[in-house]
Structures are given as structure tokens and as C-alpha cells.
Amino acid sequence: MIIERRECAVSRGRLAAVAAVALACAIFAGEAGAAELLTLERCEAEAAANNPGLKAAEKGRTAAEWRRAEAKSARLPKFTLSGSAVSTDNPTISFMSVLNQERFDPAMMGSINDPGATANFNARFGFEIPLSAGGAIRHGIRAARAAAGAAAHSEEDARRRARRSARAAYFGAVVAEEKTEAAGAALEAARAHAALAASMRDAGLTVESDSLSAAARLAEMEELKLTADNEAALAKAELLMAMGAYQGREIEVDRSALERVEFDGALEEYIESAMKNRPDLKAIEEAVKAASEAERIEAAAGRPTVGAAAHADVDRRRIGSGGGESWFAGVAANFSVYDGGRAGARRAAARAERERLEWALEQARQAAEMETRRAYYGASAAKKKMDAAARAVEQAEAAARIVNNRYANGLAVSVEVLSAEAELTRAKLRRLAALSEFVVGVETLALAAGK
Image (tube, rainbow, N blue to C red; front, side, top):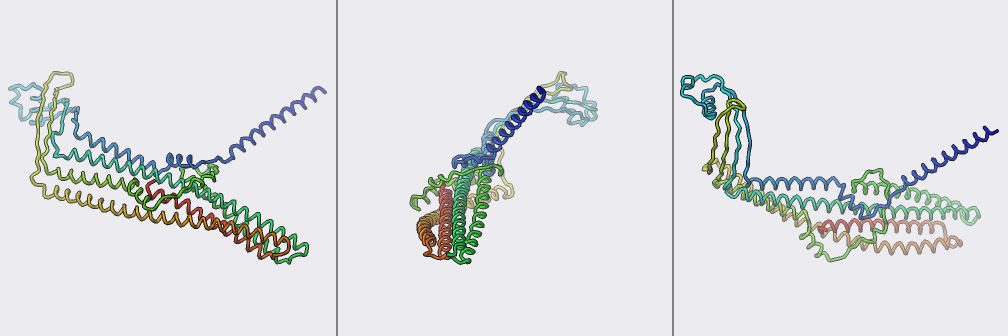
């Protein structure tokens, strides 16, 4: 009897433990499956941190900064330390090695043509510095600085585009959620009307065709809801891609973010902002500066260059033995008298490249202005369409209420109800389409205006 009670107690204990584990797993699964609320600000921050295009632009700026450091180093002295070990029976090299080792003896003259194997270990410490490069170093530093500036502006442009792209994707996901909700409301209305039509048919108040029409409308709304759900899932996938996040992440968007979409200001203000603030235009301006400096570098190639150099040598017959030490110092000048027209051709090519970039800058400015105009007109038209669609929704809702009340009281036919519900659904979809066009248009305008 005691044993049976103990077994029952153990069984109850095991059952309680299993239940606790199951409850914990259920709670954990619920928490793991819960979608996180993604704010617009966090969306922008993650896009800036994870966007591959932005990371590539960051590396481009880093590379340009290192090339700038390389250009600066051209004016600094250079120190070198080198060593060599040779063994030769070449008369000239053997004789020079013996001289450098300070062990020449007149008795060696008898074997000067056949010295045998001669070993030499040399260590050299060298120094050189450019005294004048005709301005090439100075212009090279300026060109590298301009190139680094262009890379920095390109990085800023990539960051701006990543942020705006993420914002547009975020608003797209919000609108898709709104469309899902509208489709759900239309589905519920169709389901309610189908039930009412069936009830009135059963009561002998309407004909069979009314119930069949309501059922067909219900099937149509079910299809619309499935399409809206699919579009919402796709919009979230596009948002995650714009953020550089993994696709398995469960998120929910903040619908109140739509309230922060602003559109104000005159067209001229947006165009002025584009000409003043767009990083891509600034990048081309810096590229023009770099090309101008490159043209001056090629012009400097026709001027004389002057440099100084010195080195100290230690030569030994073998490591650790005695030997000789020597040094050298000097200044050298170089001037190209004739190079077959190479320098002139390089100057002409550099000048053509600079002029090409100047025209490219003008073309980019014109394109930026037209892009801003197009975006402004698009956003303005979308706002007007959105306002008109909102009024149409209010009117369609009022009409649907009236028709439904009349139908419930036997004063309207089913086709009137279906027509009113269809018009309400179309009005809501038109409003959402205009809303999507508006928010995307505002982001496009901000991007075009350099914001």
C-alpha cells in the first residue's frame, strides 16, 4: 500500500514536471514567434549599417584616403636599408669588391684578369629626397585630396540613397498593411451580405439569384484578401532586403509613421536644394578638380626635376671580418629635351578628360533639375489624387450604408448592394494606390532634392 502511494506520488511529480516543461516551451515559442515592432528610425539606422552598396562606398572612401596619404609621402625623404652577398670571378666586379673591402694589394695585379672566386657582403643605408619636381608633387597631393573628397561625397550619396530606399520600402509595407485591412473589411462586408441574402432567400423575401450573386461577391473578396496578404508579405520582404536584414525576421511596421510624411515648399526651393546639396553633384565637382590637377601634373612633366641622394656602405669579405666603409652624396637634375611627343600627348589627354568631366557635371546638373521637377509634379499630383480618393471613400461608405439599410428593409435589390460594396472597395483601393504613390513620391522628391 505504501509502495503504491509512493508510485502515485512519483507519477504525479513527473506529470507536473512534464507540464511545467511544456508550458515553458509554449511560452518560449510564443515569444520567439512574436513579431517585433520596427520603427521608422530603426529601419533607417539598420539600412545605414547593413546596406552593401553603402559598405562598398565606405571602402572606396577609405581607399581614396590612403591614396591621398601616398601622394603626401612623395615630398618626404626616403630611407632604405639593403644588403647583398655575392661571389664572382668577374674581373671587374672582383676588383671593385676588393677595393670596397679596402684590402687591395699591388701584388694582386698579376691575377687581375683571373682573380678567382671573390666574395663580398655589402650593407647599405640610403637616403633620397626630391628637391624640385616641377610642381608635380604639389598638384598630385591636390588631385588626391579632390579624389578623396569625391569618394566622401559618393559615400554620403550612397548613405542617403540607402536611407531613402529603406524609408520608401517601410512606407510600402505600411500601405500594404492598410490594403490588407481594407481587403479584410471588404471580405467581412461580403460575408455579412452573403449571410443576409441567404437568410432572406430562405424566408422567401428574395430570389435565388440574389444569394448566388452575394456568394460570387464573397469569393471575389476572398481572392482580394489573399492577394493583399501576399502583397503585404512581399512588401515586408522588400523592406528587410532594403535594411540588409535576414528574410526570416518577423517584423511589424508602425502605421502611424504615415503621419510624418510631409510635402511642402515651392518647386524652386527643391531645385535650389538639389543644386546646393546633392552629394552626387559634389562628387563630380571634386572629380573636375582632380582632373584639373592631373592636367597640371602632366604640364609639370616638361619642367626639370632635382633630387638629392646619399648612402653609406659597409663591405666585408666575410661576415664578422674586417673590411671597408664608404659613403656617397650628390645632387642630380634631369630635364627632358625630347620624348617623341609623349608629354604633349599626355597633356592633351588630361585636358580632354578635364573638359569631359566639366560637360558631365553640366549634364548631371540638368538631369538633377529635371529629376527634381518630375518628382515634385508626381508628388503634387499624388497628393491631389489621395485627397480626392479620400473624399470618394467617404461618399462610397455613406452610399453603402444607405443601400444596405434599404436592402435590409426590402427597399433595394441585391444588385444595388453589390454595386455599392464594389464601389466602396474600388474607392478604398484607389485611395491606397494614391497613398502609396504619394509616400513614394515624397521620398523620391527628397532624394532628388539632396535631402
